[in-house]
Length: 212
Image 1 (tube, helix red, strand yellow):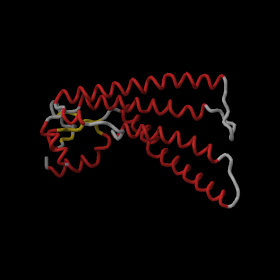
Image 2 (cartoon, rainbow, N blue to C red):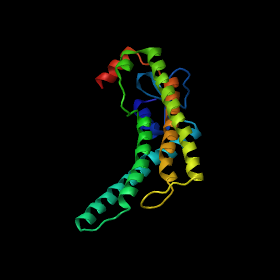
Image 3 (cartoon, helix red, strand yellow):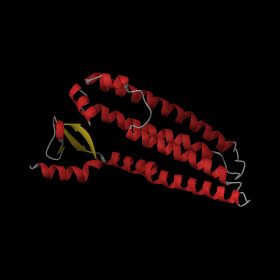
Image 4 (tube, rainbow, N blue to C red):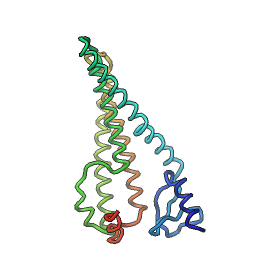
């Protein structure tokens, strides 16, 4: 097949496909450069990506826009000698949800702060083992926080704690870390699968990545 055909197919479907090895590839795989092909994702993984992607992208953008509008209106009102007592509280709680949705997106795109000296030095299986170790540690942390976060939510449902201005149950605010940790745990599992199925990093690929 011509290179142009593969490029066109790659451009059309690359968002819904996961990386894999060329060994064992069949006709329904998309061959990419450097001997790497792309393998169609499972239906479950596509659903997870759509749901989490919607929360991480669209919902986060809308919530952030609402926070900006509320804060802007509050500044204008104060300049006019008025005040919105609920604005600061609403902006703070919405911003909490925005942060945790955004944190899940950072896990998806590997954008969290990290010290990358050791990953740059490791090659081959050592690099893959190191990446999997980091994934496991992160998953354990996310699951641990989510587990105890659920216990806090149960206590708030039994013994409600009201917010100062709006008098709403604080469970709606404390649910943000729990939801965020669950989302990050799911994204971490996806990273594990990518690291297991993906090709090992060797010296040549690291040099190419550095040059890019």
